Length: 633
Image (cartoon, rainbow, N blue to C red; front, side, top):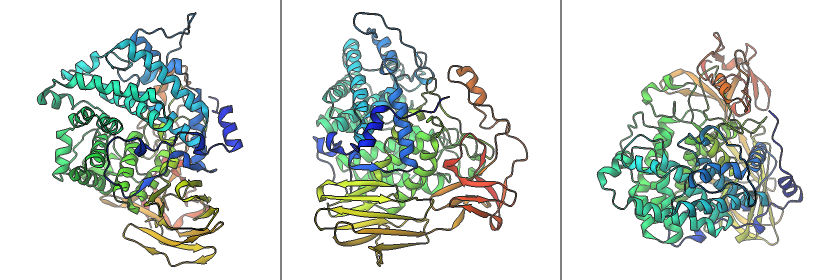
Protein backbone atom coordinates (compact mmCIF):
# COMPACT_ATOMS: atom_id res chain seq x y z
CA UNK A 1 0.00 0.00 0.00
CA UNK A 2 1.43 3.36 -0.99
CA UNK A 3 1.90 6.11 1.55
CA UNK A 4 -0.57 8.95 1.40
CA UNK A 5 0.92 12.31 0.44
CA UNK A 6 -0.42 15.82 0.94
CA UNK A 7 -2.56 17.21 -1.80
CA UNK A 8 -1.04 19.98 -3.86
CA UNK A 9 -3.61 22.48 -2.61
CA UNK A 10 -2.79 21.76 1.01
CA UNK A 11 0.94 21.84 0.39
CA UNK A 12 0.58 25.29 -1.10
CA UNK A 13 -1.51 26.46 1.84
CA UNK A 14 1.14 25.40 4.33
CA UNK A 15 4.05 26.62 2.25
CA UNK A 16 2.78 30.18 1.83
CA UNK A 17 1.39 30.42 5.35
CA UNK A 18 -2.26 31.02 4.43
CA UNK A 19 -3.51 29.03 7.39
CA UNK A 20 -4.88 31.94 9.37
CA UNK A 21 -8.62 32.16 9.90
CA UNK A 22 -8.93 35.50 8.12
CA UNK A 23 -10.21 33.91 4.94
CA UNK A 24 -12.46 31.32 6.58
CA UNK A 25 -15.70 31.43 8.46
CA UNK A 26 -14.88 31.84 12.16
CA UNK A 27 -16.88 28.81 13.19
CA UNK A 28 -17.90 30.36 16.49
CA UNK A 29 -21.04 28.38 17.26
CA UNK A 30 -22.12 30.69 20.07
CA UNK A 31 -22.26 33.70 17.74
CA UNK A 32 -24.81 31.90 15.56
CA UNK A 33 -27.21 30.85 18.30
CA UNK A 34 -30.78 32.12 18.50
CA UNK A 35 -31.15 30.81 22.06
CA UNK A 36 -29.52 32.40 25.09
CA UNK A 37 -27.02 30.01 26.63
CA UNK A 38 -25.99 29.59 30.26
CA UNK A 39 -22.79 31.63 30.61
CA UNK A 40 -19.74 29.34 30.53
CA UNK A 41 -16.62 29.88 32.60
CA UNK A 42 -14.37 29.61 29.54
CA UNK A 43 -14.64 30.00 25.78
CA UNK A 44 -12.78 27.99 23.18
CA UNK A 45 -10.90 29.68 20.37
CA UNK A 46 -12.15 29.05 16.82
CA UNK A 47 -10.16 26.33 15.10
CA UNK A 48 -8.74 28.78 12.57
CA UNK A 49 -7.20 30.89 15.32
CA UNK A 50 -4.89 28.09 16.45
CA UNK A 51 -2.30 26.88 13.96
CA UNK A 52 -0.43 23.64 14.58
CA UNK A 53 3.35 23.95 14.29
CA UNK A 54 5.58 21.00 13.31
CA UNK A 55 5.02 18.02 15.62
CA UNK A 56 3.59 14.52 15.61
CA UNK A 57 0.14 16.07 15.88
CA UNK A 58 0.56 18.08 12.72
CA UNK A 59 1.96 15.04 10.93
CA UNK A 60 -1.19 13.11 11.83
CA UNK A 61 -3.35 16.01 10.68
CA UNK A 62 -1.51 16.11 7.35
CA UNK A 63 -2.01 12.38 6.76
CA UNK A 64 -5.67 12.68 7.74
CA UNK A 65 -6.14 15.61 5.37
CA UNK A 66 -4.55 13.69 2.51
CA UNK A 67 -6.90 10.74 2.98
CA UNK A 68 -9.90 13.05 3.27
CA UNK A 69 -8.89 14.90 0.10
CA UNK A 70 -8.62 11.62 -1.81
CA UNK A 71 -12.18 10.50 -1.09
CA UNK A 72 -14.56 10.71 -4.04
CA UNK A 73 -17.79 12.57 -3.33
CA UNK A 74 -19.55 10.67 -6.15
CA UNK A 75 -18.62 7.35 -4.57
CA UNK A 76 -19.43 8.57 -1.07
CA UNK A 77 -22.94 9.65 -2.10
CA UNK A 78 -23.67 6.66 -4.30
CA UNK A 79 -25.78 4.90 -1.68
CA UNK A 80 -27.74 8.12 -1.06
CA UNK A 81 -28.44 8.49 -4.78
CA UNK A 82 -29.36 4.81 -4.98
CA UNK A 83 -31.83 5.15 -2.11
CA UNK A 84 -33.50 8.21 -3.62
CA UNK A 85 -33.47 7.04 -7.22
CA UNK A 86 -31.46 10.11 -8.17
CA UNK A 87 -29.27 10.04 -11.27
CA UNK A 88 -25.75 9.65 -9.93
CA UNK A 89 -23.92 10.49 -13.14
CA UNK A 90 -23.09 13.75 -14.82
CA UNK A 91 -25.44 15.56 -17.12
CA UNK A 92 -25.31 14.32 -20.69
CA UNK A 93 -23.81 10.91 -20.08
CA UNK A 94 -23.70 7.74 -18.04
CA UNK A 95 -21.11 7.41 -15.31
CA UNK A 96 -20.34 4.21 -13.46
CA UNK A 97 -19.35 4.59 -9.82
CA UNK A 98 -17.18 2.11 -8.00
CA UNK A 99 -18.91 1.45 -4.71
CA UNK A 100 -17.21 1.78 -1.34
CA UNK A 101 -17.29 -1.33 0.85
CA UNK A 102 -17.28 -2.19 4.53
CA UNK A 103 -19.78 -0.23 6.58
CA UNK A 104 -20.60 1.92 3.55
CA UNK A 105 -21.63 -1.00 1.35
CA UNK A 106 -25.18 -1.14 0.02
CA UNK A 107 -26.01 -4.14 2.23
CA UNK A 108 -24.93 -2.43 5.48
CA UNK A 109 -27.69 -0.82 7.52
CA UNK A 110 -25.25 1.81 8.79
CA UNK A 111 -24.41 3.15 5.33
CA UNK A 112 -24.23 6.93 5.16
CA UNK A 113 -22.66 7.48 8.59
CA UNK A 114 -19.23 8.22 7.07
CA UNK A 115 -20.71 11.03 4.99
CA UNK A 116 -21.86 12.70 8.20
CA UNK A 117 -18.46 12.33 9.86
CA UNK A 118 -16.72 13.66 6.78
CA UNK A 119 -18.95 16.73 6.59
CA UNK A 120 -17.83 17.52 10.14
CA UNK A 121 -14.20 16.69 9.38
CA UNK A 122 -14.12 18.74 6.16
CA UNK A 123 -15.57 21.70 8.05
CA UNK A 124 -13.01 21.34 10.84
CA UNK A 125 -10.13 20.87 8.42
CA UNK A 126 -11.17 23.93 6.41
CA UNK A 127 -11.42 26.05 9.54
CA UNK A 128 -8.04 24.74 10.73
CA UNK A 129 -6.05 24.99 7.50
CA UNK A 130 -7.91 27.41 5.24
CA UNK A 131 -7.33 25.01 2.31
CA UNK A 132 -10.16 25.50 -0.22
CA UNK A 133 -10.25 21.82 -1.16
CA UNK A 134 -12.04 21.02 2.09
CA UNK A 135 -14.64 23.75 1.59
CA UNK A 136 -15.18 22.44 -1.95
CA UNK A 137 -15.58 18.85 -0.75
CA UNK A 138 -18.15 19.87 1.86
CA UNK A 139 -20.07 22.02 -0.61
CA UNK A 140 -20.17 19.14 -3.12
CA UNK A 141 -21.58 16.75 -0.53
CA UNK A 142 -24.26 19.24 0.48
CA UNK A 143 -25.24 19.90 -3.13
CA UNK A 144 -25.65 16.18 -3.66
CA UNK A 145 -27.63 15.71 -0.44
CA UNK A 146 -29.93 18.54 -1.47
CA UNK A 147 -30.93 16.55 -4.57
CA UNK A 148 -31.44 13.44 -2.45
CA UNK A 149 -33.60 15.17 0.15
CA UNK A 150 -35.74 16.76 -2.55
CA UNK A 151 -36.25 13.42 -4.28
CA UNK A 152 -37.13 11.60 -1.05
CA UNK A 153 -39.58 14.35 -0.11
CA UNK A 154 -40.68 15.51 3.32
CA UNK A 155 -37.22 16.27 4.70
CA UNK A 156 -36.03 12.68 5.19
CA UNK A 157 -32.34 12.37 4.27
CA UNK A 158 -30.44 9.10 4.40
CA UNK A 159 -28.60 6.46 2.41
CA UNK A 160 -31.10 3.82 3.54
CA UNK A 161 -34.90 3.63 3.19
CA UNK A 162 -37.16 5.15 5.83
CA UNK A 163 -38.37 1.65 6.55
CA UNK A 164 -35.34 1.17 8.82
CA UNK A 165 -36.73 3.96 11.00
CA UNK A 166 -40.14 2.29 10.91
CA UNK A 167 -38.59 -0.98 12.08
CA UNK A 168 -36.99 0.86 14.98
CA UNK A 169 -40.30 2.45 15.99
CA UNK A 170 -41.99 -0.96 15.83
CA UNK A 171 -39.27 -2.39 18.10
CA UNK A 172 -38.01 -4.73 15.38
CA UNK A 173 -34.41 -5.72 14.79
CA UNK A 174 -32.36 -3.05 12.99
CA UNK A 175 -28.78 -1.86 13.44
CA UNK A 176 -28.78 1.83 14.42
CA UNK A 177 -30.72 4.10 12.05
CA UNK A 178 -30.95 7.13 14.36
CA UNK A 179 -27.22 6.82 15.03
CA UNK A 180 -26.61 7.27 11.31
CA UNK A 181 -29.04 10.18 11.05
CA UNK A 182 -27.23 11.78 13.97
CA UNK A 183 -23.94 11.74 12.06
CA UNK A 184 -25.60 13.33 9.00
CA UNK A 185 -27.41 15.97 11.04
CA UNK A 186 -24.29 16.77 13.05
CA UNK A 187 -22.26 17.05 9.84
CA UNK A 188 -24.74 19.50 8.33
CA UNK A 189 -24.70 21.62 11.47
CA UNK A 190 -20.88 21.69 11.47
CA UNK A 191 -20.84 22.68 7.81
CA UNK A 192 -23.04 25.64 8.66
CA UNK A 193 -21.17 26.59 11.83
CA UNK A 194 -17.63 26.31 10.48
CA UNK A 195 -17.98 27.15 6.78
CA UNK A 196 -21.09 29.34 6.68
CA UNK A 197 -22.97 27.05 4.27
CA UNK A 198 -26.58 28.22 4.64
CA UNK A 199 -27.83 25.34 2.50
CA UNK A 200 -26.49 22.90 5.09
CA UNK A 201 -28.62 24.50 7.78
CA UNK A 202 -31.68 24.37 5.51
CA UNK A 203 -31.16 20.62 5.00
CA UNK A 204 -30.76 20.14 8.75
CA UNK A 205 -33.94 22.10 9.48
CA UNK A 206 -35.85 19.97 6.98
CA UNK A 207 -34.53 16.83 8.71
CA UNK A 208 -35.71 18.23 12.04
CA UNK A 209 -39.16 18.98 10.65
CA UNK A 210 -39.40 15.47 9.23
CA UNK A 211 -38.39 13.94 12.59
CA UNK A 212 -40.93 16.06 14.48
CA UNK A 213 -43.69 14.86 12.19
CA UNK A 214 -42.48 11.26 12.27
CA UNK A 215 -42.40 11.02 16.06
CA UNK A 216 -45.30 13.27 17.06
CA UNK A 217 -47.71 10.39 17.71
CA UNK A 218 -45.24 7.95 19.28
CA UNK A 219 -46.44 7.10 22.79
CA UNK A 220 -44.11 6.82 25.77
CA UNK A 221 -44.13 3.03 25.88
CA UNK A 222 -43.11 2.83 22.22
CA UNK A 223 -40.50 5.55 22.77
CA UNK A 224 -38.86 3.62 25.59
CA UNK A 225 -38.65 0.48 23.46
CA UNK A 226 -37.19 2.22 20.42
CA UNK A 227 -34.55 3.98 22.55
CA UNK A 228 -33.07 0.60 23.46
CA UNK A 229 -31.60 0.69 19.97
CA UNK A 230 -28.40 2.75 19.63
CA UNK A 231 -29.22 6.32 18.60
CA UNK A 232 -25.81 7.95 19.01
CA UNK A 233 -25.89 11.65 19.88
CA UNK A 234 -29.07 12.56 18.01
CA UNK A 235 -30.27 14.25 21.21
CA UNK A 236 -27.23 16.57 21.20
CA UNK A 237 -27.79 17.39 17.51
CA UNK A 238 -31.41 18.34 18.12
CA UNK A 239 -30.29 20.55 21.02
CA UNK A 240 -27.85 22.23 18.64
CA UNK A 241 -30.52 22.64 15.98
CA UNK A 242 -32.75 24.24 18.60
CA UNK A 243 -29.90 26.58 19.58
CA UNK A 244 -29.38 27.65 15.97
CA UNK A 245 -33.03 28.23 15.14
CA UNK A 246 -34.89 28.89 18.38
CA UNK A 247 -37.54 26.40 17.22
CA UNK A 248 -38.82 24.63 20.33
CA UNK A 249 -39.98 21.65 18.27
CA UNK A 250 -36.32 20.65 18.09
CA UNK A 251 -35.99 21.05 21.86
CA UNK A 252 -38.90 18.62 22.22
CA UNK A 253 -37.17 16.21 19.85
CA UNK A 254 -33.98 16.34 21.92
CA UNK A 255 -35.96 15.59 25.07
CA UNK A 256 -37.78 12.78 23.25
CA UNK A 257 -34.42 10.98 23.11
CA UNK A 258 -33.91 11.21 26.87
CA UNK A 259 -33.15 7.58 27.71
CA UNK A 260 -34.71 6.96 31.11
CA UNK A 261 -33.09 3.56 31.60
CA UNK A 262 -29.62 5.11 31.36
CA UNK A 263 -29.96 8.69 32.61
CA UNK A 264 -32.32 8.20 35.58
CA UNK A 265 -29.84 5.91 37.41
CA UNK A 266 -27.10 8.52 36.87
CA UNK A 267 -29.33 11.13 38.47
CA UNK A 268 -29.68 8.79 41.44
CA UNK A 269 -25.86 8.40 41.59
CA UNK A 270 -26.04 4.74 40.58
CA UNK A 271 -22.60 3.79 39.24
CA UNK A 272 -23.51 0.25 38.21
CA UNK A 273 -23.27 0.39 34.42
CA UNK A 274 -23.47 -3.37 34.09
CA UNK A 275 -22.30 -4.53 30.67
CA UNK A 276 -23.99 -1.78 28.66
CA UNK A 277 -22.52 -0.76 25.32
CA UNK A 278 -20.06 2.00 26.22
CA UNK A 279 -20.23 4.11 23.08
CA UNK A 280 -24.02 3.96 23.15
CA UNK A 281 -23.88 5.29 26.72
CA UNK A 282 -21.50 8.25 26.50
CA UNK A 283 -23.38 10.28 23.82
CA UNK A 284 -26.49 10.22 26.00
CA UNK A 285 -24.50 11.98 28.70
CA UNK A 286 -23.15 14.39 26.10
CA UNK A 287 -26.73 15.30 25.30
CA UNK A 288 -27.36 16.05 28.96
CA UNK A 289 -24.28 18.27 29.14
CA UNK A 290 -25.59 20.21 26.16
CA UNK A 291 -29.04 20.37 27.76
CA UNK A 292 -27.54 22.12 30.78
CA UNK A 293 -25.83 24.71 28.57
CA UNK A 294 -29.09 25.59 26.83
CA UNK A 295 -31.65 25.25 29.62
CA UNK A 296 -29.72 25.65 32.88
CA UNK A 297 -30.93 22.26 34.11
CA UNK A 298 -28.46 21.75 36.96
CA UNK A 299 -29.30 18.07 37.30
CA UNK A 300 -28.04 17.48 33.77
CA UNK A 301 -24.66 19.00 34.62
CA UNK A 302 -24.45 17.14 37.93
CA UNK A 303 -25.10 13.73 36.39
CA UNK A 304 -22.57 14.49 33.63
CA UNK A 305 -19.92 15.25 36.24
CA UNK A 306 -20.85 12.14 38.21
CA UNK A 307 -20.48 9.98 35.11
CA UNK A 308 -17.15 11.61 34.22
CA UNK A 309 -15.71 11.05 37.67
CA UNK A 310 -16.83 7.43 37.67
CA UNK A 311 -15.17 6.85 34.32
CA UNK A 312 -11.86 8.31 35.43
CA UNK A 313 -11.94 6.61 38.83
CA UNK A 314 -12.88 3.09 37.77
CA UNK A 315 -13.20 2.48 34.03
CA UNK A 316 -10.20 4.02 32.28
CA UNK A 317 -7.23 1.97 31.07
CA UNK A 318 -3.73 3.46 31.25
CA UNK A 319 -3.87 5.05 27.74
CA UNK A 320 -7.14 6.84 28.56
CA UNK A 321 -9.17 4.30 26.61
CA UNK A 322 -12.16 2.38 27.92
CA UNK A 323 -14.46 -0.57 27.21
CA UNK A 324 -13.78 -4.24 26.47
CA UNK A 325 -15.41 -5.58 23.32
CA UNK A 326 -17.20 -2.21 23.25
CA UNK A 327 -18.90 -2.76 26.63
CA UNK A 328 -18.58 -1.86 30.28
CA UNK A 329 -17.58 -4.67 32.61
CA UNK A 330 -17.64 -5.31 36.38
CA UNK A 331 -14.86 -3.14 37.77
CA UNK A 332 -13.95 -5.79 40.35
CA UNK A 333 -12.89 -7.95 37.35
CA UNK A 334 -10.79 -5.18 35.75
CA UNK A 335 -7.72 -7.35 35.13
CA UNK A 336 -9.78 -10.00 33.31
CA UNK A 337 -10.78 -7.42 30.72
CA UNK A 338 -7.32 -6.36 29.59
CA UNK A 339 -7.95 -8.03 26.27
CA UNK A 340 -7.37 -7.75 22.56
CA UNK A 341 -10.59 -5.79 22.21
CA UNK A 342 -10.08 -2.97 24.67
CA UNK A 343 -10.42 0.67 23.79
CA UNK A 344 -12.98 1.28 21.06
CA UNK A 345 -11.69 4.57 19.68
CA UNK A 346 -15.14 6.17 19.36
CA UNK A 347 -15.48 5.95 23.15
CA UNK A 348 -12.37 8.07 23.63
CA UNK A 349 -13.55 10.49 20.93
CA UNK A 350 -16.78 11.03 22.86
CA UNK A 351 -15.05 11.28 26.25
CA UNK A 352 -12.92 14.12 24.89
CA UNK A 353 -16.05 15.90 23.72
CA UNK A 354 -17.62 15.48 27.17
CA UNK A 355 -14.46 16.82 28.81
CA UNK A 356 -14.72 20.04 26.80
CA UNK A 357 -18.30 20.58 27.95
CA UNK A 358 -17.36 20.04 31.58
CA UNK A 359 -14.29 22.26 31.33
CA UNK A 360 -16.44 25.03 29.88
CA UNK A 361 -18.71 24.83 32.91
CA UNK A 362 -15.89 24.57 35.47
CA UNK A 363 -12.25 24.64 34.30
CA UNK A 364 -10.13 22.11 36.19
CA UNK A 365 -6.68 20.80 35.39
CA UNK A 366 -7.79 17.23 36.12
CA UNK A 367 -10.10 17.33 33.10
CA UNK A 368 -7.23 18.34 30.85
CA UNK A 369 -4.93 15.79 32.48
CA UNK A 370 -7.26 13.10 31.16
CA UNK A 371 -7.69 14.90 27.86
CA UNK A 372 -3.92 14.97 27.34
CA UNK A 373 -3.49 11.32 28.28
CA UNK A 374 -6.18 10.14 25.88
CA UNK A 375 -4.97 12.43 23.11
CA UNK A 376 -1.34 11.26 23.21
CA UNK A 377 -1.79 7.59 23.91
CA UNK A 378 -4.98 6.69 22.08
CA UNK A 379 -5.96 9.26 19.46
CA UNK A 380 -2.42 10.11 18.31
CA UNK A 381 -1.51 6.42 18.29
CA UNK A 382 -4.69 5.38 16.45
CA UNK A 383 -3.22 6.40 13.10
CA UNK A 384 -0.70 4.28 11.23
CA UNK A 385 2.10 6.69 10.20
CA UNK A 386 2.92 4.58 7.14
CA UNK A 387 -0.50 4.74 5.49
CA UNK A 388 -2.67 7.18 7.44
CA UNK A 389 -5.17 4.40 8.16
CA UNK A 390 -6.66 4.06 11.66
CA UNK A 391 -7.43 1.39 14.25
CA UNK A 392 -10.83 0.46 15.66
CA UNK A 393 -9.55 -0.90 18.99
CA UNK A 394 -6.50 -0.20 21.10
CA UNK A 395 -5.80 -3.77 22.25
CA UNK A 396 -3.92 -4.07 25.55
CA UNK A 397 -3.46 -7.80 25.95
CA UNK A 398 0.22 -8.67 25.80
CA UNK A 399 1.19 -9.79 22.32
CA UNK A 400 -1.67 -8.13 20.48
CA UNK A 401 -1.20 -5.40 17.88
CA UNK A 402 -3.12 -2.60 16.21
CA UNK A 403 -5.25 -3.45 13.18
CA UNK A 404 -5.82 -0.70 10.66
CA UNK A 405 -8.59 0.22 8.27
CA UNK A 406 -8.24 0.23 4.51
CA UNK A 407 -9.01 3.14 2.16
CA UNK A 408 -11.81 1.32 0.33
CA UNK A 409 -13.39 -1.42 2.43
CA UNK A 410 -13.62 -0.49 6.11
CA UNK A 411 -15.39 2.76 7.04
CA UNK A 412 -16.05 1.56 10.57
CA UNK A 413 -17.45 3.98 13.14
CA UNK A 414 -13.90 4.60 14.40
CA UNK A 415 -12.82 5.52 10.88
CA UNK A 416 -15.55 8.16 10.84
CA UNK A 417 -14.71 9.61 14.24
CA UNK A 418 -11.03 9.34 13.30
CA UNK A 419 -11.51 11.71 10.38
CA UNK A 420 -12.71 14.28 12.92
CA UNK A 421 -10.25 13.52 15.73
CA UNK A 422 -7.15 14.07 13.63
CA UNK A 423 -8.60 17.29 12.22
CA UNK A 424 -9.17 18.97 15.58
CA UNK A 425 -5.99 18.62 17.61
CA UNK A 426 -5.86 22.41 17.93
CA UNK A 427 -9.29 22.86 19.46
CA UNK A 428 -8.41 22.50 23.16
CA UNK A 429 -4.82 23.71 23.42
CA UNK A 430 -6.00 27.14 24.60
CA UNK A 431 -9.11 28.68 26.11
CA UNK A 432 -10.02 32.11 27.44
CA UNK A 433 -12.10 33.48 30.29
CA UNK A 434 -13.52 36.97 30.47
CA UNK A 435 -11.13 38.19 27.78
CA UNK A 436 -8.46 38.76 30.41
CA UNK A 437 -7.38 35.19 31.17
CA UNK A 438 -5.66 32.72 28.87
CA UNK A 439 -5.72 29.01 29.72
CA UNK A 440 -2.80 27.00 28.34
CA UNK A 441 -4.10 23.45 28.50
CA UNK A 442 -1.83 21.47 26.19
CA UNK A 443 1.88 21.60 25.48
CA UNK A 444 1.47 21.09 21.74
CA UNK A 445 3.56 23.23 19.33
CA UNK A 446 1.14 25.81 18.03
CA UNK A 447 0.46 29.47 17.41
CA UNK A 448 -2.58 31.20 18.85
CA UNK A 449 -4.07 34.32 17.30
CA UNK A 450 -5.96 35.95 20.20
CA UNK A 451 -7.81 38.47 18.08
CA UNK A 452 -9.74 40.21 20.83
CA UNK A 453 -6.50 41.09 22.61
CA UNK A 454 -4.38 41.75 19.55
CA UNK A 455 -1.94 39.13 20.81
CA UNK A 456 -0.32 36.05 19.32
CA UNK A 457 1.19 33.28 21.43
CA UNK A 458 3.74 30.98 19.83
CA UNK A 459 4.42 27.73 21.67
CA UNK A 460 7.41 25.66 20.57
CA UNK A 461 8.89 22.53 22.12
CA UNK A 462 9.97 18.93 21.62
CA UNK A 463 7.63 17.74 24.34
CA UNK A 464 7.36 15.03 25.57
CA UNK A 465 10.84 14.06 24.34
CA UNK A 466 12.12 17.09 26.24
CA UNK A 467 10.32 18.01 29.51
CA UNK A 468 9.84 21.68 28.71
CA UNK A 469 7.97 24.16 26.55
CA UNK A 470 8.41 27.81 25.61
CA UNK A 471 5.73 30.39 24.82
CA UNK A 472 6.57 33.69 23.15
CA UNK A 473 4.21 36.69 23.25
CA UNK A 474 3.77 38.71 20.07
CA UNK A 475 1.96 42.04 20.40
CA UNK A 476 2.14 45.46 18.82
CA UNK A 477 1.57 47.14 22.19
CA UNK A 478 1.80 46.13 25.85
CA UNK A 479 -1.31 44.28 27.00
CA UNK A 480 -2.37 43.00 30.42
CA UNK A 481 -3.78 39.51 30.94
CA UNK A 482 -3.36 36.49 33.19
CA UNK A 483 -1.72 33.43 31.66
CA UNK A 484 -2.92 30.29 33.41
CA UNK A 485 -0.77 27.26 32.65
CA UNK A 486 -1.82 23.77 33.61
CA UNK A 487 0.20 22.19 36.40
CA UNK A 488 -0.06 18.57 35.23
CA UNK A 489 -0.55 15.81 37.76
CA UNK A 490 2.36 13.83 36.28
CA UNK A 491 4.93 16.56 37.07
CA UNK A 492 6.50 16.32 40.52
CA UNK A 493 7.51 19.95 40.04
CA UNK A 494 6.96 22.60 37.39
CA UNK A 495 9.35 25.54 37.17
CA UNK A 496 8.05 28.73 35.58
CA UNK A 497 10.32 31.42 34.17
CA UNK A 498 9.39 34.70 32.51
CA UNK A 499 12.11 36.23 30.37
CA UNK A 500 14.62 33.90 31.99
CA UNK A 501 13.73 34.78 35.59
CA UNK A 502 11.99 32.30 37.82
CA UNK A 503 8.58 33.42 39.06
CA UNK A 504 6.66 32.14 42.04
CA UNK A 505 3.37 31.47 40.28
CA UNK A 506 0.60 30.36 42.62
CA UNK A 507 -1.49 27.30 41.81
CA UNK A 508 -5.17 27.98 42.17
CA UNK A 509 -7.96 25.55 43.11
CA UNK A 510 -8.41 24.89 39.37
CA UNK A 511 -4.92 23.35 39.20
CA UNK A 512 -3.46 26.13 37.03
CA UNK A 513 -0.52 28.39 37.81
CA UNK A 514 -1.45 32.03 37.24
CA UNK A 515 0.99 34.60 35.81
CA UNK A 516 -0.55 38.07 35.86
CA UNK A 517 1.39 40.88 34.21
CA UNK A 518 1.50 43.46 31.48
CA UNK A 519 2.97 41.59 28.53
CA UNK A 520 5.25 43.10 25.92
CA UNK A 521 6.33 41.93 22.50
CA UNK A 522 8.92 39.17 22.77
CA UNK A 523 8.14 38.22 26.37
CA UNK A 524 8.63 34.51 26.87
CA UNK A 525 7.33 31.94 29.32
CA UNK A 526 9.44 28.84 29.92
CA UNK A 527 8.00 25.80 31.66
CA UNK A 528 10.27 23.02 32.86
CA UNK A 529 8.86 19.76 34.24
CA UNK A 530 10.37 17.28 36.64
CA UNK A 531 9.24 13.87 35.38
CA UNK A 532 10.02 10.41 36.71
CA UNK A 533 9.21 7.02 35.25
CA UNK A 534 6.36 5.56 37.26
CA UNK A 535 4.16 2.48 37.47
CA UNK A 536 0.38 2.71 37.34
CA UNK A 537 -1.03 -0.43 38.90
CA UNK A 538 -3.89 -2.48 37.61
CA UNK A 539 -6.81 -1.98 40.02
CA UNK A 540 -6.82 -4.86 42.48
CA UNK A 541 -3.37 -6.10 41.45
CA UNK A 542 -0.46 -4.30 43.11
CA UNK A 543 2.14 -6.43 41.32
CA UNK A 544 0.90 -5.63 37.82
CA UNK A 545 0.94 -2.30 36.05
CA UNK A 546 1.84 -0.06 33.13
CA UNK A 547 4.97 2.05 32.73
CA UNK A 548 4.22 5.75 32.31
CA UNK A 549 6.46 8.77 31.76
CA UNK A 550 4.74 12.12 32.05
CA UNK A 551 1.50 11.74 30.09
CA UNK A 552 3.01 9.01 27.89
CA UNK A 553 2.15 5.35 28.32
CA UNK A 554 5.07 3.11 27.37
CA UNK A 555 4.97 -0.29 25.72
CA UNK A 556 7.43 -3.04 24.98
CA UNK A 557 8.17 -4.02 21.39
CA UNK A 558 7.47 -7.75 21.08
CA UNK A 559 8.14 -8.42 17.41
CA UNK A 560 5.97 -9.64 14.56
CA UNK A 561 6.03 -13.42 14.98
CA UNK A 562 2.90 -15.02 13.57
CA UNK A 563 1.40 -11.76 12.34
CA UNK A 564 -0.33 -11.94 8.98
CA UNK A 565 0.53 -9.02 6.71
CA UNK A 566 -2.22 -6.48 6.14
CA UNK A 567 -4.55 -7.73 3.44
CA UNK A 568 -4.61 -5.70 0.24
CA UNK A 569 -7.60 -3.41 0.10
CA UNK A 570 -8.73 -5.04 -3.11
CA UNK A 571 -9.16 -8.36 -1.32
CA UNK A 572 -11.24 -7.68 1.80
CA UNK A 573 -11.97 -11.38 2.23
CA UNK A 574 -8.37 -11.86 3.37
CA UNK A 575 -8.68 -9.03 5.85
CA UNK A 576 -10.04 -11.39 8.50
CA UNK A 577 -6.64 -13.10 8.55
CA UNK A 578 -5.22 -9.87 9.91
CA UNK A 579 -7.79 -9.73 12.72
CA UNK A 580 -5.63 -11.68 15.14
CA UNK A 581 -6.34 -9.64 18.27
CA UNK A 582 -6.73 -12.50 20.74
CA UNK A 583 -5.54 -15.33 18.52
CA UNK A 584 -2.23 -16.79 17.34
CA UNK A 585 -0.28 -14.93 20.01
CA UNK A 586 3.08 -16.69 20.41
CA UNK A 587 3.67 -18.43 23.70
CA UNK A 588 6.37 -17.30 26.06
CA UNK A 589 6.32 -13.59 25.29
CA UNK A 590 8.01 -11.48 27.99
CA UNK A 591 5.51 -10.40 30.63
CA UNK A 592 7.71 -9.19 33.51
CA UNK A 593 9.70 -5.97 33.94
CA UNK A 594 12.26 -5.21 36.62
CA UNK A 595 11.94 -1.45 37.00
CA UNK A 596 15.33 -0.99 38.66
CA UNK A 597 16.94 -2.83 35.75
CA UNK A 598 15.63 -0.50 33.04
CA UNK A 599 18.33 1.33 31.10
CA UNK A 600 17.45 4.70 29.56
CA UNK A 601 18.60 4.72 25.94
CA UNK A 602 16.91 7.85 24.63
CA UNK A 603 14.57 10.71 25.59
CA UNK A 604 11.58 8.34 25.58
CA UNK A 605 13.30 4.98 25.30
CA UNK A 606 14.39 2.31 27.77
CA UNK A 607 15.65 -1.25 27.50
CA UNK A 608 14.89 -4.06 29.94
CA UNK A 609 17.51 -6.45 31.28
CA UNK A 610 16.24 -8.95 28.71
CA UNK A 611 16.76 -6.49 25.88
CA UNK A 612 13.12 -5.50 25.29
CA UNK A 613 12.79 -1.99 23.91
CA UNK A 614 10.35 0.17 25.86
CA UNK A 615 8.95 3.12 23.90
CA UNK A 616 5.79 5.26 23.67
CA UNK A 617 2.73 3.21 22.78
CA UNK A 618 1.79 5.82 20.17
CA UNK A 619 5.03 5.02 18.30
CA UNK A 620 4.49 1.27 18.04
CA UNK A 621 2.80 0.14 14.84
CA UNK A 622 2.66 -3.08 12.80
CA UNK A 623 4.20 -4.97 15.69
CA UNK A 624 3.11 -6.84 18.79
CA UNK A 625 3.51 -5.05 22.10
CA UNK A 626 3.00 -5.26 25.84
CA UNK A 627 1.57 -2.50 28.04
CA UNK A 628 0.71 -4.18 31.35
CA UNK A 629 3.56 -6.03 33.05
CA UNK A 630 4.23 -8.12 36.12
CA UNK A 631 6.27 -5.53 38.00
CA UNK A 632 9.44 -6.30 39.90
CA UNK A 633 11.04 -3.39 41.71
